[in-house]
Length: 366
Image (cartoon, rainbow, N blue to C red; front, top):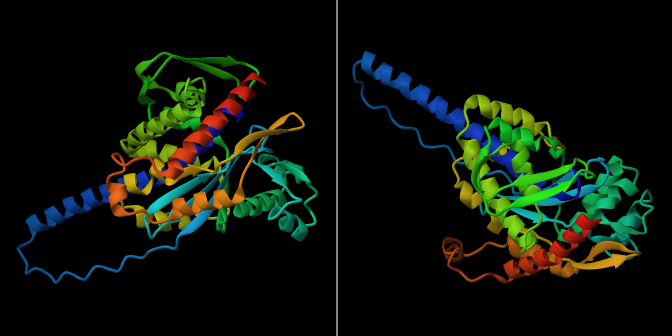
């Protein structure tokens, strides 16, 4: 996946939810059209009848709110460079997303990680970055379970489900829908044949149709003057444009998309679980369910150990960040989000993004 393709996993996670939901919408719409046509024919062929008594609507089945961990591997399938916790909240009808930086420094001699190690004799690690836990435990299932426990400690949440992702098919997803029209904000140029996969970005500013190759370059580009903050805004704009293109896709395109995207995932839950939540969220406002206002990145500050870049953190502040995200927000705040002043959590996130931008630039030079 390479150092600069971390965002692809985030995009693909969103695409899976959007694709599955859009597919259900299309199927239900076509079914409704068919039923309407048949009903019209029946009404024309048969004499009018007395109106039948309309049965009372069935009570809506509300699935439980659940928390899942999404793990994205690098090209070697050993470093877990993408770590995201998603909370499907059926009380607030929102999907909350918490991103965990891959360079968080985990010291197993300190609590709460000391207790995790004490309970598991297979953990032979003294300390390492969080994305190295899996490989340091032999790249086995036990490593994923330890990673899950560490992230539970970091966030203060209990994780119900876990899935891993391979983002190699991102380009194919964009190509299947015929590309995405997007207004590239500035000149983007970066070549690095030594990355895996090789990095080749060459985009001119302006509105244009991006195929899979160009779209991948867009979301991987880092050379903004404002660093990560501006890059994230561009990525969010692209995923919005991609969503609109997906929802306008034909049934044939949607079928191909679902096949492609689900090749990227391995999970400890099945399609039945997915469908339960899709059926519930089907008639909800997607802009309310999935919004950048519902996403945070845990805070950290740059440091180094033996010359290696790491991120240290305050676990109590991380817990506060998570609880603020999960808390019910007043309706007035939601309805006037564009006019409201930035929340304290949003300012903290911006500061964190500026810190990581310097680290990203240092990684590019390596």
